[in-house]
Image (cartoon, rainbow, N blue to C red; front, side):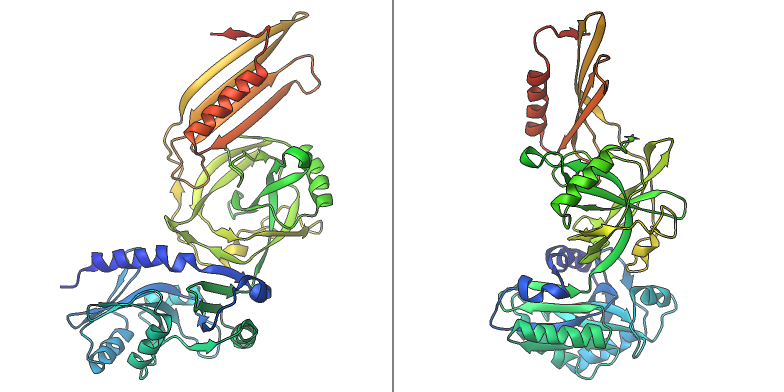
Length: 455
């Protein structure tokens, strides 16, 4: 009997250690981002699902990293015949299961729609070998493995070796990309370098979203924008967080946007950490921007990506639900879209689901309670007016979710004699040592002579 768990573990290991490490490259960056090497192995990228083709004791199955096992597709018999003709007893081969539409481009949605029907037009493109007849193939045996795959599947139709070509220059990679993607309409190109690097070249995706948060730069760039938090509207009128963008802004844009966003602050019951581990200041969702991303990934090493969907009512953001989403690879700001409005057409979340398939599951907001670690309050009275400074440190107990930091520090400064009576500072980190330093330094800086502790 075939040991499914063993193959599931191999699929998960391959996904985490190989497939997820492909370096995304925009087609305009081939000469600048792909390192020089003696030669490269090029192949087209099919728009389907990653599976292992497993053969043992005369039985063929397809198994993926999520534990899904497929045993009843028409191409199963094709695979068995090819292995028998090659006198192979055992095999574990990585590839892409996809739906063949002839001369039309096939998308992942086509595969999903036809899997339950057991369509005879579901194909498998083999692109790597994990093992054959107890021989384990090393990951750097790129060319040997492709030669072996070509030999095993030379007579295949529904199961075939992925088309590959060896070239010796990056200019040839550009030419191959133009033919495969622009002319033949494939999803992208995979480049395997003799140095061991693997690149994934795809057309960049252009998206529109609304800014719902920002972070200010520090030190000599104070008063300038560092990063923005972007969301799109779902059908149930929620703001689905989609990207954190810090690249593409000119210095003038950073100054101008910072001034605009500083005037639009709103409250939020949900804290989102920026790339610099500083909490985003949330703002009224009104400024729409256009941005590009080299690629959109629905999974990472921990599994399917989920991000928070927020409700916005009465100038307050509240967490609603963790939902399947994507990670944007190298997002870059392009421009503000004054010609678009905040509605479910102009910034619709389906911009993403039109490009990439997401899991249907949604997690209800059932999260662990945060735990307060330290809390101190100090008061000072000047000319009959009481000032208050409060320091609060807590552990979220939710850091397994990508949008949650492990620790949050919150400083509140209230002064009735000041124009801006209430000031807040929020810092987030995953380091126990760092958050302790943040707390202690804030106490030293803000609690001087005259401030008395309040119990």
